Image (cartoon, rainbow over all chains, first blue to last red; front, side, top):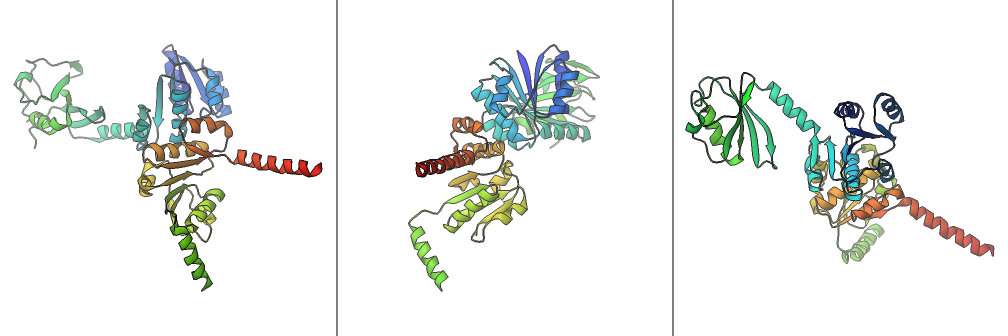
Amino acid sequence: MKIVLAGGKKITYYLAKNLISKGMAITIINKDKAFCEEMAKTLKALIIHGDASNLLILKKAEIFDNDIIVALTTRDQDNLIICELASKVLKVGKVFSLINDSENEQVFRKLGITNIINMSEIFSSVIEQRLSSYPIINLMPFEEGKALVIQIEVEEGFPIVGKMVKDLPFAEGALIGTVNRGGNVFIPHGDTVFEVGDRLLVICLPADQTHTMQAITGWD
Amino acid sequence: MRNIAQNILKREKMSKRKSWYVIVIGSGRFGARLAGKLSYEDHSVVVIDTNETNFDNLPPEYTGFTIQGDATDVEVLKLAKAHKADLFLALTDDDNTNFFVSQVAKDIFHVPHVISRVYDPANLPLFHEFKIETITPVLLALSTANKMLEKIAEEDK
């Protein structure tokens, strides 16, 4: 099994470096000749100079169905063509794509490319988390928004403080997955008592979100 | 006066045909002229181009709309009411862009007729695999050249 990195510059280099150190076989395809020469000198990887959105170049990489291809160009239209060629023509099983315009995520999904790295979305959610002084962070929606993972830091005055899991008025559609208490992460049992400063990872259905948050924080 | 008469005549001729809602991506020499022709034939046309100065290529008879924006941005296609289009023409000078917008027009906005310009004939199999109709200028030029050469050869006999 090898990983083919198509397009991209810095991100490709660092990703390749990281994956090679984990013992994976890497092939890099890039349009930029100077970049290819540089990579050939610095990385233990197969480097192919050429346009990855061209089927002939992709074929040169000898990608098989158990290989992985990652489209990393800065243009979504190029990434789409790389993914479509790889998955539909070369029958590559695992196709990943970087998405630059976060609105294109939906487009890629509808066209059958589901392994998506939505750059701007990831950045903005990380920034939001870091900026937020609010104790509740919506980490990410799963299964197209049908499940939510929420991180909550327990503050003084929350009704949950001093209570056991089994005493919480939780709906069917919610559960506390992990508790981070001073860096020590564990999975709560029925008799775990919550303390101020606990960081909880809550999994819930959107319909139960309001009710669950209220049970933990006491806020309306 | 003559102009009005001509217009009435033209309209009568056209009224037999349904008026289409057409979206043209790329206002270069090809896109702009085709948009002008369709507009002259009384179809409703919207031309989209990233570069506003490209709209200068549109002929005087063009009476449709223009949108300055990147057609690979779905919001721009929504603004152009792509879901209402009868015909979608991807005519930029970049095959990957044409492929992307054609796929989006076909699979997201369900436009019944999607035609894309393909620069590099090597890309044709991909477009055909995804059932996108194509115009390949290189092949058209080749076939015209062939006809001319055959004619010259015929005259030379």
